[in-house]
Length: 288
Image (tube, rainbow, N blue to C red; front, side, top):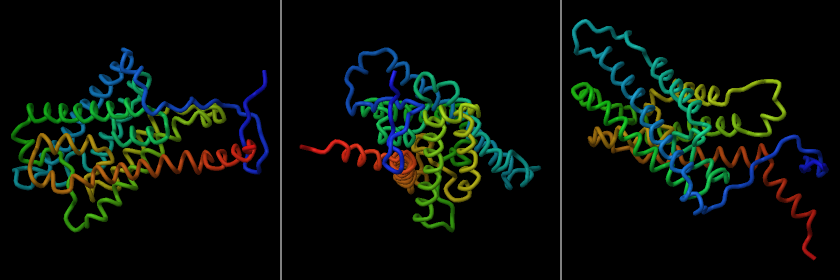
């Protein structure tokens, strides 16, 4: 059986040792009649609910343990910024591992948006995933408030806000770059080309994705509290519902979506040479 061919950098053809999945259709109404589609929505909802529940509890717990107004508190106590970063990164590792085979383990509208731009998911699935993720985030934070109402209100509900001393432009830039790192890692960790050619190096895809979330949180918690996930920012804003939580909410949507779009473009058209392949294909099939 003849192998597929791939356009090499110098215009020649080489055998492909991997197979890319076909591009997802823009609109696939057939999905709406499949149970697997609704099962994936449920998985995204529950995963985002659990993600927000654990991480927001961690943030509120840390603020409670280091509150200078409380007696016998230690300013250096609690889990610290590194512990919060581990909570976010660790939960993403766990939840992506659990849901990857069901929904793809997005748990983030920005990730879904990037995969949609790369034709990995249809428009229908992308929109419904984002709705499920946002509802899951709101529900997860709602559970946190129901269990810890006094601390929830006192310590800001785990809402993302721009830290004092930073401009909106700096906050937006931090969210763009942070989301770029995350979505770029998602593309790289799930790339069939990497799986085929680096098969001698076993890589559990959720691990680098979770580690990327951890590293980005270490860098940007002091600036924005780290969003890089519009659902994560929306959930606390809706449940906490104070002006400060809404003032800069746009940063946590615009930034991640721009970062995701840049990561999708960089991976698909630069690293995977999508533009070069398209031009080579066009030149090899001239219009008569």
